[in-house]
Length: 316
Image (cartoon, rainbow, N blue to C red; front, side, top):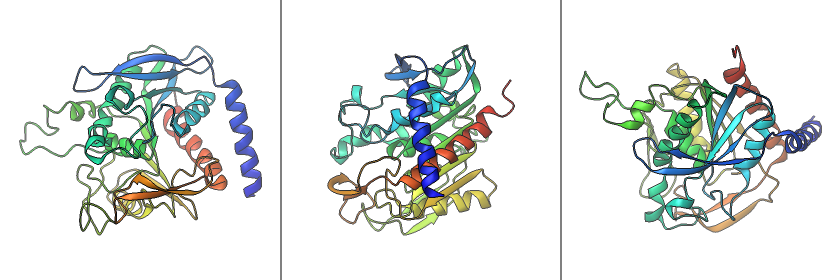
């Protein structure tokens, strides 16, 4: 069964490479809450549309020469399934052309997942302004640092202490979240940061999560896919986040792949790199990544079904 699924996944990838649509276009989107222009790549499927769409948030390696390649692999696969995909580049114009996987801790906070959520909503506004996009059928998706961005984009804003300002009306991102993404997929995200009413705690700056509090209040259906052996963004905080959210009535699903590491959606060999920034390590550095063919094949199936259910069902 596993061999068959791997073969199917490989054939799907080959098909996607041949049929993913028009040549990518270079565009710019305006970050929500500022006038900052973010470069992005727009991929359009074949046909006249209008299309459902996906905002793809890249991982910590960015989109430059050291990119993992995962964002564009997923983008082309989704375009072949009939989605328009936009991939904002949150790093290159902000001084991180080689990504932030090993960048100095103080510097990389300028492009953390919460900052990048503003980029994602800028891309959403860009897509909604296009006549060939179904504005109510746009999802956000990302892996690792992009998964962090996805979770930051999909939680409800904290309630204001002022009854007349329930969504912090002076907060541009909170305003954008009044009309949120229709769905979200987070691949091996960091579930340790604070996301609205959800928070965790650690004994110090680095190390494993020791406690959980609150509930992640998802604005729309959210799917989390992660690996059991992930030592960069561990699965356990995500398991707790999902369980608490579902118990409170929020549409959060999770699947944890046995034996899989961080970045399981690749053909790369499993390897440990000591220079990688890792807040979940006792030392703050060092993380393992590597592909898992069975997990990658299943993730393709899970994501295709999830997005079809939430972006294509009853599409006018």
